[in-house]
Image (cartoon, rainbow, N blue to C red):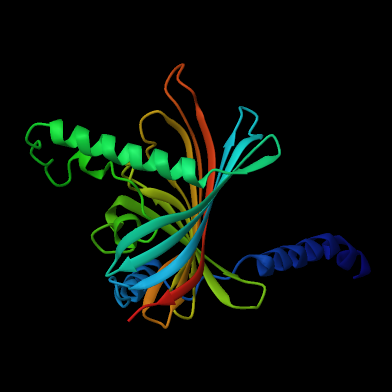
Length: 273
C-alpha cells in the first residue's frame, strides 16, 4: 500500500500544483461584453455634452533627437473657457528651455501666433468656392484630428461603432481596492479614427477613467502615435479630461522628423452656470 501511495504522490502533487495555478488565474468578469458596452455607452450618454467650465491648462511639449533625448521643452500656461462644449484657449505664458537655459518667450510666441492667424485668413480669402463635402463614411471623412473630450467620435462603446472592433475584458483593482474593468479593444476595420488599446473602467459606475490608445491605421507620414488620457466626472454631470499625453514620431523623407512628447494637465477646473 505504501508503494502505491509513493507511486501516486507525484501525480497528486502535480494535481495540487495545477489547482493552485488555476486558482491564481484572473476570475471571469462578472459582466459580459455586450452588457458592459451598453452600460458604458449609457453612462456616457448621461453626461451633459454642453459643459460650461473654466480651467488652467499646463501644456508641456518636448522635442527629442533620434535617441529620444530632449532637445527643446516648451511649457505653456493656458486659460481655458468651455461654453456649451465650445473651447476657447488663451495663452498666458510660454517658457522655452534649450540646453538647460529657460527663457520667457511669451511675447514672441503671441506675435508668431497672430502672424499665423493673419496668413491663414489671407489664404482662406484667396481660395475659390469650397469643394463639395465628402460623402459620409468615405475614407477621407475620418481623417480628422482627435479630441479626447469629444468621446462620441473616438470611443467604441456606441452600438453603431462596435462592429468595427473586437473586445476582451479583464478584472482588476486600483491600490485603494476599487474594482475595475480593463477593456482591451482591437479594430477589425483599420482606420485612423478607429483606435486600439485598453480602457480602464470603474466597475461600479461604468465610467471610463483612463485610456491608452494607438490608431489602427497611422496617418500619412506618421511612424508612431500613442495617446493616453485620464478623465474625471464633475458633479456627476460633466465628463471632462484631466490629463492627456501624446507621443508622435513622424516626418516625410528628408524633411525634419518630428519626435514629440506632449502632455496637458487640467487644473483649477470650475463649473460655470
